Amino acid sequence: MTSADWPDDFEKAVRQHLPLLADGTALTSEASLLALGLDSLATVGLLVEVEETFAVQFPDEDLRAETFATPATLWAVVVRLRDGAAT
Image (cartoon, helix red, strand yellow):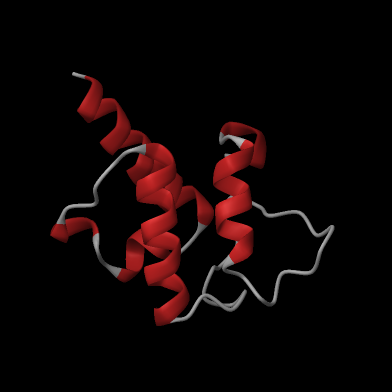
C-alpha cells in the first residue's frame, strides 16, 4: 500500500499527530507511527479526527495498538468501517 491508496485528508490527519515526521518526508504505508512520535495522547486526537473526517466510529475491538501501528493498518480499519457503514 502506498500513500496514493488513501485520500489526502487521511494523510493530513495522520501527519498532524506525528511530531517526528519531517515536512516533505514521505509517509509510507508501513512506517511505524510509534517511531514517528504517536503517543497515547496523540492517538486519541488522531482517533477523533479520523472518526469525524470519515464519519466512522471505532468499536472497542479496534481500539488497540495494532490498529495504530502503521498508516496502512489504520487506513484498513477506516475502509472496513466506512464500507460497513454503507451497507
